[in-house]
Length: 94
Image (cartoon, rainbow, N blue to C red):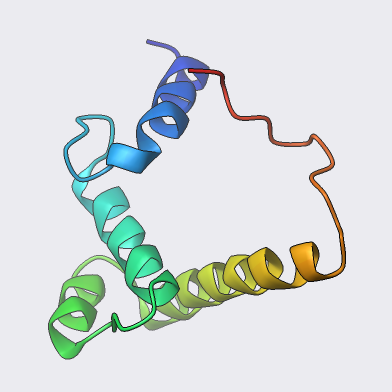
């Protein structure tokens, strides 16, 4: 499988990332952080931070959290201002 095919598989299986074999341990950890930061009422608790520290440096954790926060910001700001997708990242059809 090429890197592109693997990437396309990951995009296609993102909604099912917990059960998908397309994601490795560190990727699942990053996705869990993103999910917890995105869903109201969920938190990145001490246990999750401990797991993060086993794989990422402090700077990497900050960068991951900032990237997730930026995308959450965009997901609220863009629709409010009527900004639509520009077609740079098209999801494959199912």
